[in-house]
Length: 110
Length: 119
Image (cartoon, rainbow over all chains, first blue to last red):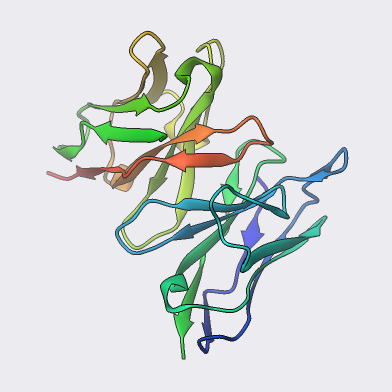
């Protein structure tokens, strides 16, 4: 299985930039696409898709969110961070079965 | 508006069975593969199973193979997860999710159904 590694937590100030990383133990690129996706989950809620195929903004997601990366290294950036962004963020790969998730990064405000 | 509504969760004894349902609306259900994802208390997300748009193909994580069965009724726009021989480690919130054609991403999620396996 492909293993995805995220830092457990990140604290940023309102209005600053948050950069959340996700590293995989195998390349998740295939035929020009990076099969990496990002989700936001607030306490007591279901996950919500933010970014698909590494850098594509999902429908209805504000442009403060962006994703980049390829191969084995990916980042989700939130700039500027707003109070409503406090949540846990998960990366997920779909290059190989089984699809796997990172352990999640909890974003908190300083 | 895309909606996925799970039902059927609750408390069940180890070794017993439970069946979850997920009613879909707001999109053409039989055009999409569907999946179940679980989340144990205070833990991260784990994919459980996926079924193709027509039900002809199914995929499972190793820990549930032979115990869980994913199925669908396209006439009713409903996804199912039959869970047999339940174990305490199956305790989790189970989400149904729409599996988008664009690269295996889950682009819509239900609110989840809580399953507790305990005597």
